[in-house]
Image 1 (cartoon, each protein chain N blue to C red):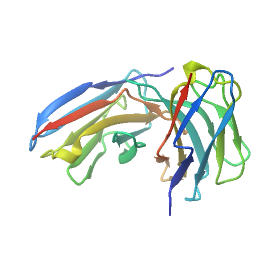
Image 2: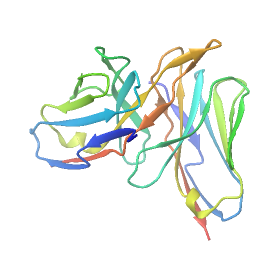
Image 3: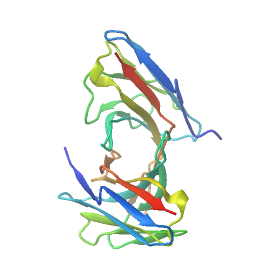
Length: 118
Length: 111
């Protein structure tokens, strides 16, 4: 059980180049997320997918697109990379469940992709 | 967007000491999660809180969901060197599943 895996671990791009960050989870979770983390800041949500076939914008979606390929995989694409997108990107997944009127949603994170845009 | 204010930003403590940190918001949250992040790694979930007033322990860690639902506290007892890292609080509002993260508390332990 690998949990949440991300590829690549490191990437350097030139301004204007495109790339796709891959994420997969083997925990049979319904929901998946993409975050970015910048120095001195907490994680900020880029996009999320509550279930297979659906995606929604988070706090900082500009410059990104996502694809929920199937229940296991959720990719993040940078169509034209900019230096402001230099960051560490984390993928997460969760299995939302409810009982007794309480909604349980514990998110588990991958190891991150460190992206530098020159 | 919503903001979670986490304090202190950093702390330097002696091994064996107890540690307290907190997270506050102007908004009500229905879920509070506490994560620890080691250098070069992703955040790891420590404790999840789902009810106002709830007090939950995980080994030497104890977290509380504030009664006003606008704050949460994390305590670490008898700190050890491996407690070094950044601790993040995160909250969920309403019935959704979007997490809002605090800015983190960096813990450094002096041997």
